[in-house]
Structure formats: structure tokens, C-alpha cells
Image (cartoon, rainbow, N blue to C red; front, side, top):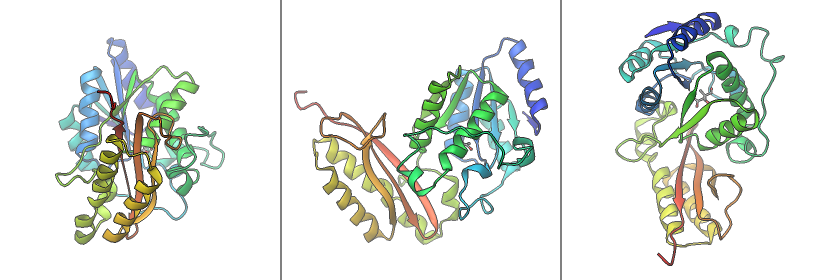
Length: 287
Ligand code: PAF
């Protein structure tokens, strides 16, 4: 696997692969890779002939008081994991390579509606930062397909909408969240947790499971379920940011006749913000 740091080097390497008739798969990341990322690369390698990954901690998607500076940078270990997962080329640009004229004058991509609410409400500008960097990366790599994790459920919805609305000729694939044995969704931010917090963290997934099971059985009082779930999170020492039941595709608030729903949450453990979600299909009573 080659690592390149500039756009011309990236374009040259991708052009070589394409001239050999290869289908290009792409996995954008912010590094500090774990088995969840490995699964994305393995999937890309199954669906494409040449896999490009990027590692770029994108300042444009971090709020002023967020963890941009302390976000873990672990390039050597990441390169190892990428090689083992079947990646062919790593693009690891510096901030100046991505934003040569500075971020304040950078053209932005904003996806209305889907970017609002949930994480968009607590992280203003976050999804504009994500959509902007992902569209830049898409234009740099020009992949045939790109693979993202479903853990960042709203992000995936925003990227799908961007690709559709801007007619980008890219197949976007979402992969199920990879979890630790106790259910905690793998995340680079789990590394911030103390041992005690790490032991508490799986409560988030357990609450989602309890809510999803009730919804699948036909519970329609979403407000009561949410209140109950929030109480369970608080009792365990998590501070819920949001806990909601939404339509799985449009992300609008759930309605009683909806069949495809997602229970979606963000909660703080100390200063660490965890997110998770669980898709649920309402069972057909006549089945
Ligand atoms: O999910 C992430 O790691 C990031 O938001 C992404 C998609 C790489 C954009 O910076």
C-alpha cells in the first residue's frame, strides 16, 4: 500500500488503476482506525478492484469547543490495519492540502433538512463540514463506490442526499455498526473513556435495544418510550443529548403508521459524546 499526501499524487495513482480497467472503491476516515473501519475496507475490497482510504481529521466539521486537538492521530497503526484489510492506497493530506486558501473562504456544501436536528442541533455546522470535505474527497478520488458505517446514521443519510442531489456518479454503501462483545459501538472516541465509563457505556445500546424491541412489538407511544429510555440513561450516569424515534429514511419524527424506524441517540459520559442507533421494523400484526 502506498501512502500519498498530495492531490496530484493521489490523482496519478488512481488514474493508473483506472487505466488498468479497475473499479475504484473509497473509504474516507479520520484515522485512529478500529475493526469497524477494517470492515469498511474489506467490503470496499470485495466490491472494487482498487481501494483508496483517506485519513484526514477535518477541522471544518469540529465545533470550537470540540475535540479537534485531542482527536487521536495514529498513522503507523492505521497504515498497518489498512494493509491487513486490503487497502491499496492511502491518502493522508495535511490541512493545507485540503484547504490551501484557508477554511473561511472554502466553498461549502450544505444539505438542508437532513442536517438539521439530532447531531445537527447540538453540533451546528458539523454536517456542512462533513458534506464539504466528503464532496472534495469524492472529487479528488472519483471513486465508483464509497463505503460508510451506519453508526454515523445521520451522516450517512446526509451523504446519500448530497450524492443524489448533486448527481455524483458514486454508489454509496452503508455497513452495519461493528460492536464490542458487550454491545458498545466501536468508535475512536471510546478511547477517551476511563475504565469505569467504559463499563457504563454499553447501557446506551441496551436502552436502544429495549426501545426497539418494544416498537417492533407494536408500542406506538414513542414519547413514553423515550422518557423511559432517558431515565435509564440518566440512572446509569449517562447524560442524554438526544434520544429519539425517527423514520429510518427521512429522519423525520416517527408517526404511528411508520414501519421502518430508527431509534437514535447521543449521550455524554463525562466529556465524551457517544452516538448510536438501531434500525427497527414494526412487525406486521397479520403475519
Ligand atoms: O465519519 C468520519 O470519520 C468523518 O465524518 C468523514 C466521513 C471521514 C468525513 O470527515
